[in-house]
Amino acid sequence: IERLKAGDARAFDALVCRYSNDVFALLYRLTDGSEEAADLTQETFLSALTAIKGFRGEAGVKTWLFRIAINHSRNRFRWWKRRRRDVTVSIDAEIGQTERKVHETIADKGRDPEETAIANERERAMIAALNQLSEIFREAIILCDIEGFSYEEIASALDVNIGTVKSRIARGREELRRKLKDF
Image (tube, rainbow, N blue to C red; front, side):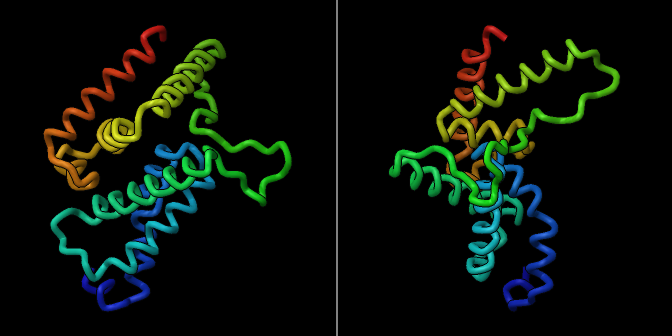
C-alpha cells in the first residue's frame, strides 16, 4: 500500500494481479455479463489507483476494492436504467454469438445426463432468482454466501451497519426461498 501511495507501478501491477479475478467475479455476479464486468473491473482499478492516497487501512484491501466495485456497478446500473436499457452489446462479438454463462461448464464425468440437466436447471433458476432480487439484497447475498465475507466486511464494503447487513441477508434469503419454492 505504501508503495502504491508512492506511485510504484509494480505495486499497482501486483494489486491488479492479486485481486482482479475476485473483483471480476463479484462484478460478473452483480451484472451477469462478462463484457460489463470486465469494463467495471477496469474502472474499479483505475478508481483505486486515483484514490489510493485516501486509503486509511480501516478495511482490508479486498473489502475496499469491493466497495469501489459495488459503487461502480450501482452507478452503471442507474446509468442504464435512466436510458431504459438493461444489457450491453459488444461491437466485437460476432452476430449470433452468446456469452458464456456460469452454468455452462464441462459436466462431471461421474454424473449421468439427467443429473447434469437437473443441476444445470437448478443453477439457472438460482441465477435468475438472484438477478430478480433488488440490488441491496443481491449485493448482500453475493458478498455473504458466494464471496464468503463476514458481516463486518460486508458492512464495510456496502457502507452500512452490521444490523442492516444481517437484515438484508435474511430478507434476501427469504425472497430467494419464495422465488425458488417450486424447485
